[in-house]
Image (cartoon, rainbow, N blue to C red; front, top):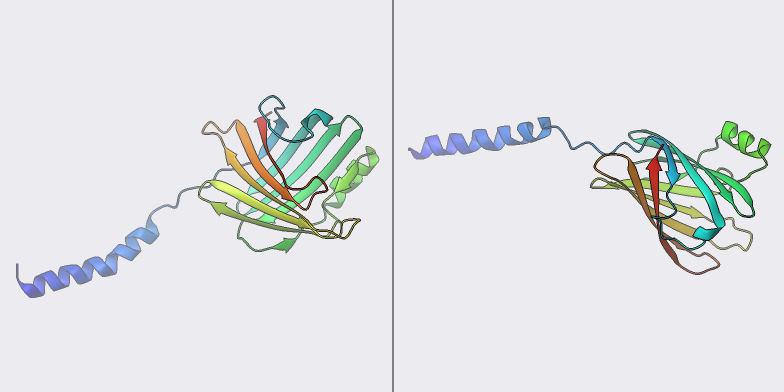
Length: 181
């Protein structure tokens, strides 16, 4: 093959390869949408014995995810709300007035929507990493939590590995396992 022909073939490949790669479909991220119930037997976390039940309601339309948590404890019940965008940018957590009002009418305490929480979410392959920081705690400290969400291949099991720093108990690690309802 002549030298000029090799050059033009190499040039054509160099020009067309980026277009081919850009047109290739990107791997889809898992969709965490649904209603989930905590599987206490499969979970490993401090204070698990105090939890009677814990449910998540997740609305996930990439790049946005909204998470409503309702938990029943031996000493009462609580609710929290978290909204994030999976672009890695830290934002103030949104208010969800309807959710907050519903929780208050049910006599539940609420966490997250008005507590000065900062939220950041980004993808690490097919795992979603959600980081939160609450800075207006009663004692003035900051509590940081990192959650790594993953979905089983059949989409029926949600696993959340977490680390919480700044807690009165020191650094806390655990794994919550949820089953799709």
